[in-house]
Image 1 (cartoon, rainbow, N blue to C red):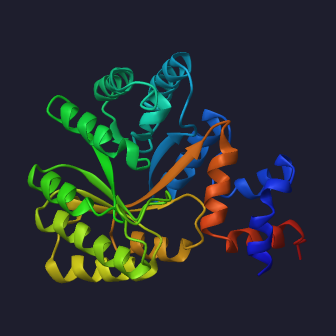
Image 2 (image 1 turned 90 degrees about the vertical axis):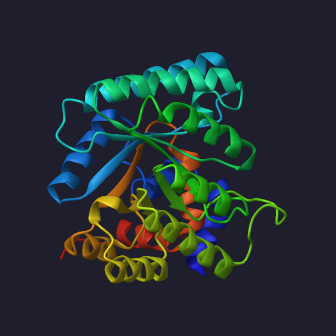
Image 3 (image 1 turned 30 degrees about the vertical axis):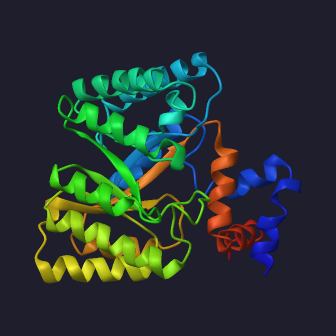
Length: 299
């Protein structure tokens, strides 16, 4: 109850106070913060993917600045020993302004990434951008094979999308989906989403197409780990993924120790407020966890 009360009153709280909670979910505001965290996670045998926080920009200049920020990120990370893997949001590169602008900017980032042996994940946002994002992904795959995109299990259309991409040998991250969508296009029932999630991942695994199993739902993790073991799915065909800060560390460590690739999504940047607010709303227990530790003194 207290945790949910904290989350519900967030809009009334000063930003400095919310920033205390955000530290669990973001690496920091600077590139150096993110690289330091990725280095530590690499030492703990976790893979990572880096993402610059920010989406739904409002000008062409902002979209172009996002492009240059990603190119600079690739340049900086190319000298490091941790995963050369980044995620980007199409609206941060202009998809909410103009399709061709976004495609041009995304292509520029992916071309530079390709030259530096990086993998790029084109993230999925809310439903107005689903078809456009998949169009960009498909148009670039032939020239740049080290790219992937994301499918959200709560959308009714996702079964058809995954079946098609699996047949093409594509690379997908499967997540449940966090945006509020109409019942006409998205499942609303928790169990229906879970069942669709399992089916989508199994479709990718059966086709031997690479899949990132991105979920914090222990039931889904346990069920899919057992399926992978029972079917003898090769380790090079999948990975498990989780957001930085979600409080299931012991389960993630168990996946790593069992020999599965375990990738942590590491966001960073100045636009931390909106991202942290979404994460806290999804996981109110974290609010209580952080608050407790604010008042915890060393023994």
